[in-house]
Image (cartoon, rainbow, N blue to C red; front, side, top):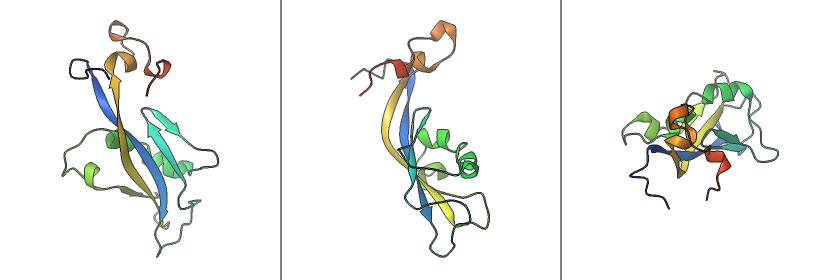
Length: 126
């Protein structure tokens, strides 16, 4: 394992985003309890057959990079895990769970020519 204390970069959480339903409010959008996807770095990873509404995804996308980063214990991004479907009549929600952390070296993720190394996705990663 590399010594990340001497390397410029950032730790990011992998995320799991799972559809959950409010038992008292049925969904009006296409939400199926238990369907999910993962966020690994900048990639959204869907297993075969898993789906998410593009309208719900549009509401979730701005929150995912913030949820990947380390936050203070009292920050709502640390304590709140569920996001409601953007349709006010829908009982669908999305539970965002932080999972393992990954190290992303700045040189592997930057577009700045003077700081650029090999992209992280071209390297063997555990």
